[in-house]
Length: 264
Ligand SMILES: [Zn+2]
Image (tube, rainbow, N blue to C red; front, side, top):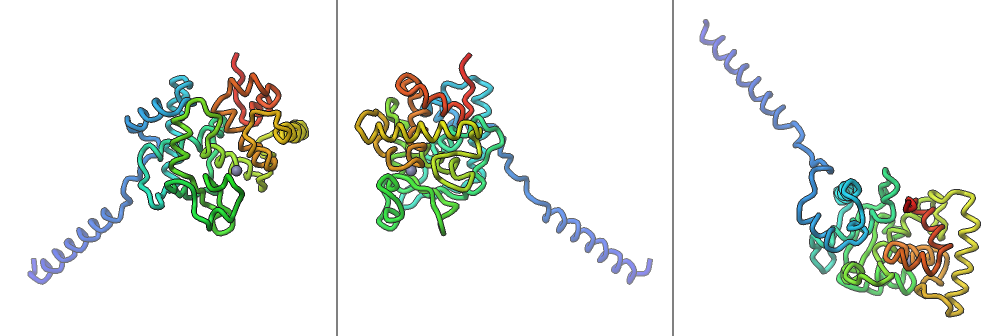
């Protein structure tokens, strides 16, 4: 073969190889499958720290783990003057999934980031809301896709096994409430229409009892219907048996809202 042709063809071959490698290099990297097996230590944290998870059967536990992984793959968690640990990630994700666990496809599509503060917030954020908001808040306006939580409160809620409070669940319930456009205590997106009026009346009745000092529900719940819904939801998920005993009507309607399958 003509040496010139050889040069040309080897150059062409080299070019082809180069393109081939370029192509290979361009191939997207294997993306993380959100449903890859849960790291053992995450499962250990759930087993030790999250009573809701402890009470699930094996199939439901696996489902809960998948939902947690999916949440964590879609939501950024950023520490502000604090370091976000694995425990924080697991507790935030668990608090997110607990209220929506019985809604299989539910994702918090409007939530992009959770900011974790060491404890209560600075004045800038305090001014945006009422008293309780210093412990946690769902952003609005420029912070529309952001939730802020206190690391201390987040952990404390899971350490205290007899409390009726859980700030992180409270904030996620506000997001559930917000699905229909308004944070007003009426989760119209998930509550059947026929229950809306009874729910509204029951909320107003219970708020009156709190105001008259005749209730064991956190007085913060009397702020307005939105706070009432978030506060009694904390109670519902933290101390279900106690709520059922003390407030059967409330318990029953919350069961309908969160689609808790009644125990046979
Ligand atoms: Zn609130």
